[in-house]
Length: 446
Image 1 (cartoon, rainbow, N blue to C red):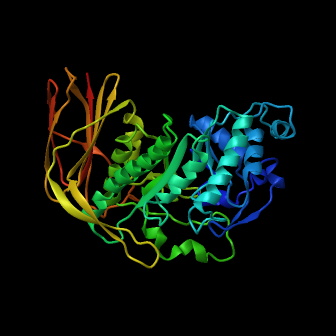
Image 2 (image 1 turned 45 degrees about the vertical axis):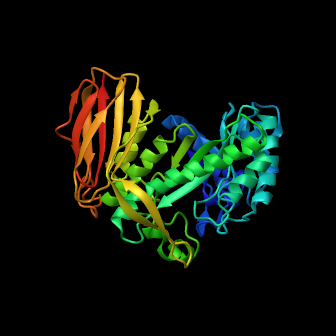
């Protein structure tokens, strides 16, 4: 779980969020044009992570702050005691060190929307110096450098190359972010868009390995895909930039997800699984209300959005060893539409398979995640699971329906998984029929 951002971190003073809540300052948050009360801070976040059995991933501010503030935050969090900052944590009520092992070196520093955005050289130097000092304090930590905020950034490629040239020896990860959209109202192109995540991942891997090759190094930089989701409707007009009176916790970016969004979201899950050899971290942005799988209201109920279901299934059953699935499927032509500023960008995609698939082997079986991207044709799903025998169907679920259907407070279960009937297994051979425009999970035991 990544905290405290996101764009917010580039203007964040970590000292504001520790100590007695009543004494914490209120600040103008330039990221979301609101007032930040700092009632929730680092220690509260760590307590929440421990209660939820979630590994914390803490970001340091390399926008308006720098390496000195980064190493001070690390000392406050991870040093046992006997220094001013570690004893300050103890005085605040946390006698044991937080032992945070995974840290982000800033956020989206290539973006002009970011507070104190930087060139790749400027960021590479700052990230290197922050990394050095942080690891001098705690050599056990792992660090993620900022990669490109998206594949469409004008500096993509050059940014990764220059940044890693500076900090290759000091970091373990480089980040990448992607938000998929259907601005064009083009379902075939929208459903194909997760394939651009595959290309993005593979291109960043190639760049990182090229930096390693120039060094004659066997070290491999891993990828932290620490922002990804479907997001587009609430970006219209950048409504968050015109909020009056700097409100506290305004209801912004509350995307309402459709069945079509869930299908594209599922395709993104498959892309991440299929690159698990290098994508070792992938943080869904975000968790509740703000472009989120869970919605709620103050004093009211919570309900699951459509995208909740692919994410929950991947989180629960995507554990184990991801297999290299070979897919033989009919294909279609598609164009992905991605607006950047006032200019429209159209990307003709190569032949897109109707079937997108990930297979994960567990100790006691196999999980298959399958997306049928055809709007009107069933797929005869015929799988040969080489090396497996005695398989049986443990569970089979499908998610489908009206592509514009959504879940709401009044109708929270309009879109939810239903049994996928007709799945048969003989030996290492599985057969099923996947409905048009459907997300499917099949779990096999044996």
